[in-house]
Length: 180
Length: 233
Length: 204
Image 1 (tube, rainbow over the protein chains, first blue to last red):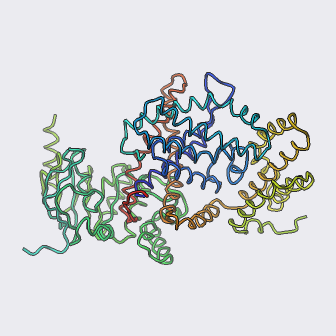
Image 2 (image 1 turned 45 degrees about the vertical axis):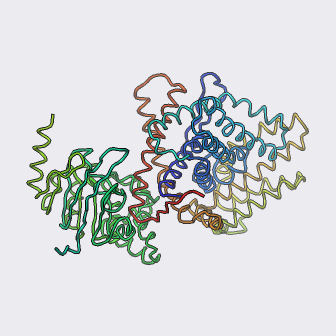
């Protein structure tokens, strides 16, 4: 791990942490459900830094969250991990890992492939972790949990399209910053 | 001819990045106590000074600092050469003022008691004690640059390289920094656009397009540079 | 009446509090007795009062989770029965209440230091303590600046006017990230110049 790696990881960790303070936005086509931008952080961390470094950035965020210096889902401290959003927060690590691995094995993807990478990491894996903890914590059924998550799908899909756009723009302007 | 012990020697050094010649081959010996470096943006000044402490490796040639060879003796060179960057915000890298000043000493593995004492002393000397446990963001630009300088001075370097140390400061803090730099016992190499900073310097180099195109006293070099800029469209 | 001095909760080591919290969260899921669960859910309120905080401050911490808990409770209530719904809700409140009590009675810096020490156990697995400490310090140092950059970029966009849209949002975030990656090189040079060990090795 070089000094440049450490600086990159820390800045992405700061980015993920800062996203936790950005209020949810309302998507025009689905105004009933606010869209939290937070999960864009780990997706972009994996997509730009790779699986290992992206995961480290998420881990730094977890440490700050546990220490009460960051927010996620409106909570901070151990309560953030133990509450209903805890699984999603844990899923941030999966999102970074899976997205990073996908870009590592397919370094020059077309947009459809990128959508797939980020959907698997940022939606499927993230939701799976979130749902698993939710079910364990509250004993609701899988069907109920899936329905609860379904309302966020349109917004999260829009987020992924944004992430693809952001990553491509960043790659054009600062290719040296990528460490996949 | 015997070479002075205290000299920075560039021997046919050049820097090529992505096929572009950032610094053309140059050979130079720097022995003076106060050396200035001026030139237009993109002339290669920042790359040149980053060669001195090994932040930028040369594409060809050799550099030595007071007998220490780069890159072989990089760690020793970095103990000898302190570096102050242009943007104060980018060089304050710890959460609080005291922690940032102490950073270099931690890297040298000094004992905690010694670090605490030296940090306390330098903060007292430069008026930063009230901010010891504060984050850098509450400091003004001038105070941040002062903090950056303290972080370097605490390492007790013999040479300090400064990359446009007053560019981002207001007039009051520019003057304060200039006065402070005048009192420092270390050898200084300063890149600057602020000609007033070079008053009393021993030598000023003018750079343009990756080369040193003039090397003289401050008045001579400044006049040369001003003529050069006037002649440009 | 207070039966312990308030300082007790504050002086307890963060690692003990975190360990106790972890153990409790584990045990909670094996308890089905609704009376015991109710007692455990009420306990954080007592801790808060003993530590000198108001119950309102506990309520404020738990509010975001409470809304979701209510939704889930309703799910359970209509799906199964009152008792199961009650147990789920009480477990949640007990868990979150104790977690909030840990956060309220522990300084952030103390928690952070405890977590950093805990990470040292991973040193044999390749996680270098000095690098972790530097990464944490850098994140803490640059988090406020990162937020400030976002505010500045948003303010500049708002000053230009125009409709809000997802495309605009994407542009803003990419500008934000651009600014951050530009900082990487400068920060890395500043660290290097002050003699931090620079181990240029291939990643394992």
